[in-house]
Length: 452
Image (cartoon, rainbow, N blue to C red):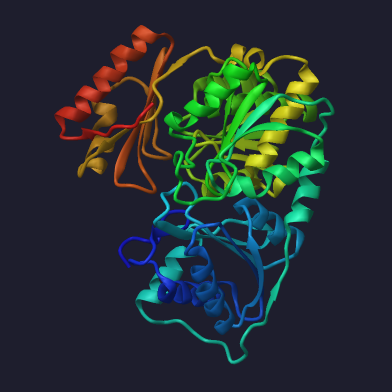
């Protein structure tokens, strides 16, 4: 099965370890996990093979005794909305998110859009498939179809408190954001400059992965050329997004987390705000300054959602562009995030660049990736190599010093070590990043291209 069972979902090149036959087995395994006789809603993205994978997956679900509602083409957040609003016992989304076109995958959740990651059940599904312990139910499940697109758009519209017309650009990257954007704009009376709204999972323009800032260059150019209020780019299944401000500058996700957190705390009073281990120290500083409780969390949507739900916090944000809202079932949605930012801009009467300026205090390196076979050994010796800081091992290792910090962690999706460094000024950042890079290089770690 060659490693298709990941930390948060199932993902692989379609036609290799993940194919229609495996899709059937995974459907049967998920049905066994949720329980026979339960209701499961299933959507898919626009990849050419998503139809075939979904059909075989649904056959497996039905043979396991699950009653299935096929919701057809949709974004991943629409499946969370359907799961919760429709009272389903579980949901599955056929998608490989931002991966290239040859990939496919499946994301899962239980009732109330509670995520199923590896430790929450994917491990059991993998074990059952490997041991051939899949059980068919005596009674095969029913199959029906229901489209949740209109209901999801209604839900999004209710979250809009803005009334004036924005001038903005939207880059859907030929992913599933393009399935909703025109209907959303029509419903809200907005117009936007469009980039790559047609569904094309060969990704002819750029991968739908806004965490790679090179994919944002066309969006930045549009904002600058048009003097627009902002730009927003969605990933392939429209659960993540990144913003470009009115000056055409990329807004780092931890800075956007800070903006939304401060707004929520001012409006709603004290609460827990969840943020990930790679985030700027300005996040915690601003949460505390505004009466909130900063809660540091492991990287990954299943961990972030679980922690937000546990703390009953209003909001959480992650450096990869996932933003989580209590008002959206403790889940993430690119469109809901876009609406939240539009609400904040209108209410403040300020430009996005002005709103985030007070939070851009420190200098970040961005994420730098290293390939290594010695990840665990390097993580273990980091605090000896860089002694005297505050050490946190919740996810890899983060070591904080008074004027700089670094985080080093294993990727959950690729065989890489990921480094983030932040310092009080550029000279110190350059010095400390060079020191950490030098140590990793001496120990045989090879820096990968594509960091930012």
